[in-house]
Length: 207
Image 1: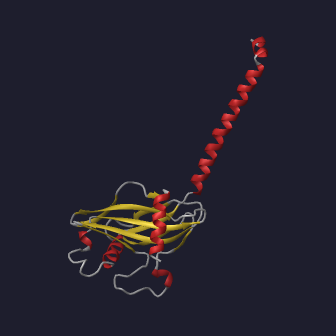
Image 2 (image 1 turned 120 degrees about the vertical axis):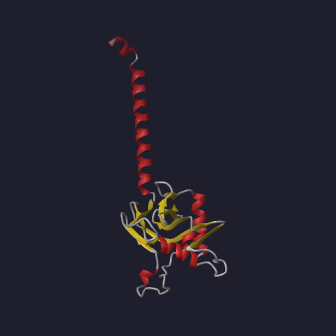
Image 3 (image 1 turned 180 degrees about the vertical axis):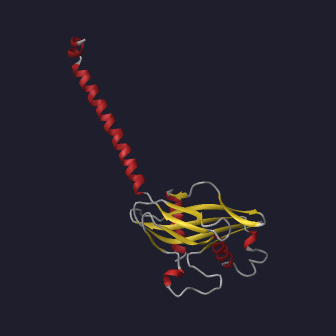
C-alpha cells in the first residue's frame, strides 16, 4: 500500500490539489450568490388590522439598505372592466388634503426592516376609482371590484434601475360583507431587467 502511494504520489498530489480547487470554487460561488441575495431589494406587501375594506395595506422593506418609495399603483378589476392608476399622493375620502406635506404622499425613504402603512384597501380602491373620468366611472362602485393589485416602485442604492414589487388580492364576499384575501402567499419581486426597464419608463412618464 505504502509502496503504491509512493509510486503514484505525483498523481495523488495533483488530484488532491484539483479537489481542493473545486471545493474553493464551489465555496466562492455559494459566497457570491449569498452576497448578491443580500444586496437585492426585497419589499413585502401585506394585509393587516382587519379583513374587510377597512384592513390596512402594509409595505415592509426587508432589504439590507433603505429604499426610496417612488410610486404606488393600484390596478382594479370589475366585471368587464379593468383599470390602473397611481395612488402615490394620498387623498382623503373627503377630498381634504392633510396639512402636513409628508402626510399627503406615500413617497419617501423606507429604512431596512421598517414597515409603512400605505392606507386601507377601501381607501386605495376609492382613490383609484376617483382617478377615472366621471363618465367612465358610471356603474362602478367599490363593492363591484373583484380583485386588485398593489404595485410599489422604488429606488435602491446599489441598483441602476428602479426596483419594485406587486401583490394581488381578491375581494370576496363573506356574510354579505367584502373580505380582502391575498392571492398567493408571497409578494412578487420585480427583478427582471426588462420589467424594471418598464418601471423606469413609467416613472419618466409620470414625472
